[in-house]
Length: 373
Image 1: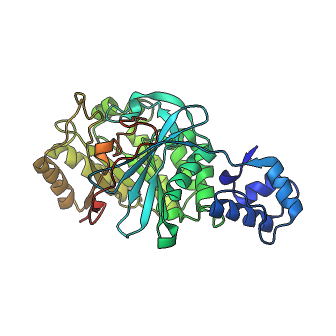
Image 2: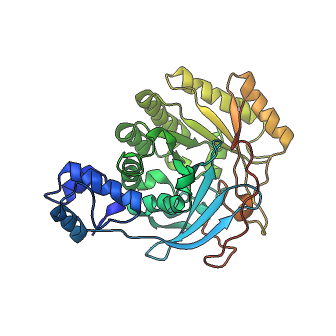
Image 3: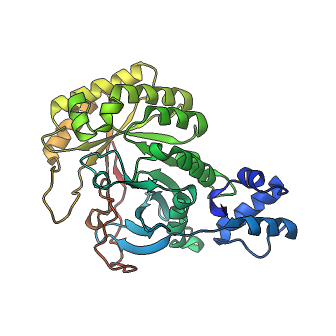
């Protein structure tokens, strides 16, 4: 059966003979407006609807639990797939009231083993299908008050899994999400975050050039990066940045470089100087100047011992000052939902609640989700 929430109008016409593109657009639009295929769709023939019903279905994820942070307006959804895997999705408030971004998972688990990430401890269970990615956004959207103007404004592929290791499903989900008849989300409001798979980065540039790219850097020093991110053994940062350079040239979009500060590991002034050198070289070679996002380390297990610590305020400021002096402004990412293990690096299918239980609603939101300069 064809998952109707996970096809573009063009894909629907290709999959079901006799469905013209005009009617396909109306059908796909109706599915996303109503969360089901209505009995009748305006200006769509009965014979067309019958064909689509016979060939299509709307599979769902099971809502296992919802956790609302007590310290900020982040909400984590735990969703169960038909195969029994638990994946996690986070609703992120944006600066404009009523607008949200959805942090989606692309895999159940992850094979890359980045040692400062909770998902990396799980190993890979399987890739998610296109409909399972799209359904995460739809599940979040169902909890919004669209009558009051609340809506999903963007998507970030930064949940569980490495998106570029499941690229077919990720690209197809981007096409559905950005299609005017689908979720109608501007491609420029969609970001794909990667630990660094060069072939996937190049394919993103070719096939979905409106989408933004984010790279996890971890360290500009090869020996340190390999220890933190084993993927560097197969794809050294130099190769990853070559692919990102090509992406920047093709799309004319500046990549985001995500840098998680780990106390005593990668947060020294010398580390900052090496990062600045890397960023200047990237720009000098024809790329757009990278947007550097400084990410505070989030505890992976709120109760157990931690392998790493969060950098002090002074060390973080000294690090960012080096970047400023090199002409490289940075922003400090506000990574919310840490108390419910919903912040960057914490997603691992953890459930400190009973299925379906909701914690108290969030406190007043911060003025911004980033600290900009």
